[in-house]
Length: 469
Image 1 (cartoon, rainbow, N blue to C red):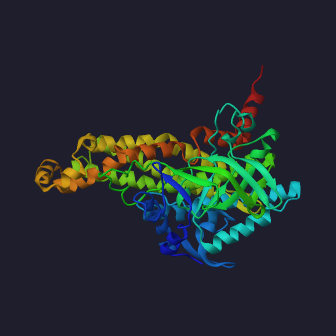
Image 2 (tube, rainbow, N blue to C red):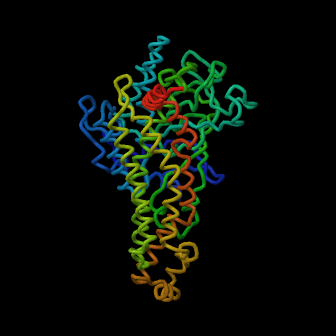
Image 3 (cartoon, rainbow, N blue to C red):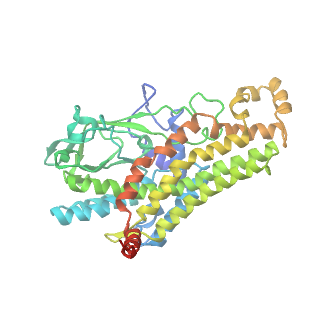
């Protein structure tokens, strides 16, 4: 059954081990910083548009609808896009990423079962039913800390640089290691763990996938400092919502067998990692297309406030921003229109997905460049919010910061632009847009691995056959 925001918030008061700036957090729902990420996640549970009537489970979240065809993927793109707009242009990941992982596990579990006679698919589907019926908030822990990146997992001096199985018991396994960059992990109900990369046989102890509650014994979340808000009185957008990432430590964590979905089947680990990455990059281009509205709209308002809306350089920048947004939207729709069907489940076209993701990686800096150029240097040198709320100073700020609009309106617009273009939030978003959901290198590898050169080869072969020597 669908949960309410309050029910979700109550569910994360479960004794989980969370640290923020060197201190243990007793209750993440009341912590002055992490509680904002909790409230951001909770808002998803107030969105009626995310629900649909499933023939097996009744009224449930659309995020968990298994994509079978183009229409299902297009609906998923629209859901992610529209929800991102609902949440002020910042993504709400807590059911999108979990379902990305679940679809991937469904596909790969069947392949493992056929090859090795295991029963992973039944386990995955029981867990899927549990997630759907309980309307869970989920995080995915995939990226290992990796240690010396020139070495494979089994070659590391410290064997815990990739998460691994260290004990095997009749009732389950024990794992040790850590995962990094886990978005909303500290505020999720469940953590789904996936392998990060392709493995060789010597790495078999690192070939493991499973799901555990966030309050599992031995699980520890070390939350990143939220510099875009913490101690920042100038925060405008980040003050109302943001997401947190964490280093998750697995300190001798026990996982029961019914929640283990991959165990030492090293030859399928890379395919599981790749399938999840494809789904999650589709999610990325869907939400990034919506987030582009945040920058496009801010640039447009800054141009109007400065009285330069029709200046040639401004128009050029707006065109660049429109292209960025619409290329990502077109990429998502194209990936949905020509999906791969694997084990009866639709996977977004990997080539179109990776091309669009690479475009997003490479050109977000151009969007930021345009916003800064249109707004001007004021966003880096303007008076603070503390100055503005001081009535003695405000009279001067209002008078001298006027432009084509009154000073108060221009200050409000430039405050938002400052956050988007000259703040810790911009630094966070820039890093995320370059590296989140896979680096540029990872997207290039994925695209080159799956690209079909047949048409190009046939064309050249035809021409070569006509050349007489």
